[in-house]
Length: 192
Image 1 (tube, one colour):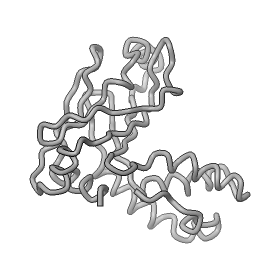
Image 2 (cartoon, one colour):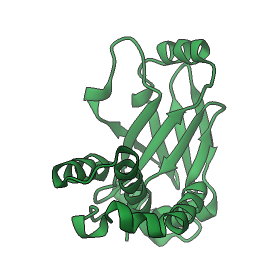
Image 3 (tube, helix red, strand yellow):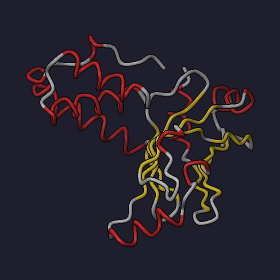
């Protein structure tokens, strides 16, 4: 997927004029690309719109106007975009109560290595940035990529009724969620 380029990022004043409409459109798109994985994890599959929204909102929130700062945000968030032959997602552990969340994050150490997507029976294990690993716990937010096998990619691209599931096979958090046909079609479009 093509990275967000500087010409696509609006200045603060220009962004304010379109913000409400742009946010509403992308939030609706993210709603369709969001899936629960078990009782406490939520996954959002990333694309250019979701990443551009994150860049624009970070610039707005932090009041970033200097070119170096804009370039830094673009570089940071462009890493969330899927590359060739892969899908990309942000998986969040959502436990409101702090002590319960901290206990889960310790017990689920290594969770970042337990995610996969399965497309028409072809399992594709997620990859993650090992620099984000912690020796005693997992994190509450996981940025993962799903490198697709040629068979999985072909099924996603060519089979209009491909079946897909997101899963975690961690001993503390083993869950599987079937993806809706609408989400599967959207992921296929990501590969175009």
